[in-house]
Image (tube, rainbow, N blue to C red; front, side, top):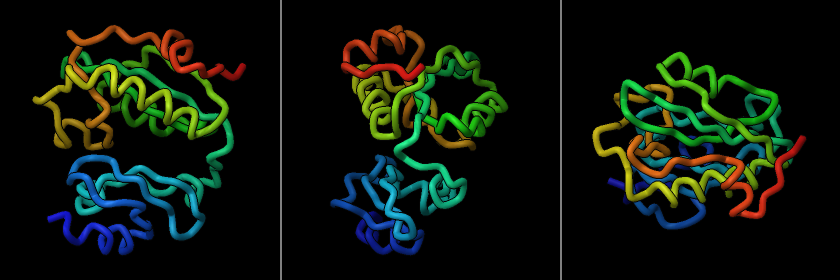
Length: 169
């Protein structure tokens, strides 16, 4: 199925930057319009659920401050980590509308730094992946950044300290 990955990414205005490592795994890609780095799964593109490029659609720049957030989806029994631009709350609102409670956010200098913090949390919680949660539970996207509530208790301030990232005031 992922044999056509480069073609599928190109059809959606993206350049796949490496070999596709799986249908649901985020892939490193570049927007063919503005050149911004993106992390999008093959499945999101095929399903039509991949988020649009923030730089192209909202004038949001990757070098501006971004927030890392923790959300609890109590009814699903999962935590979720994610990132969003500091000037745009739509991602947080989408999760809240789907039953998530925003527990914590931190502001960091840019998208790459936010992605580094998010990647650290995902790696720390990988052993507690919520096998019972999938795209049908997250119509807003983002289910691959979830873990069971019986997993690690994450505090973003501790993650910043562990990764050497400074919060932006």
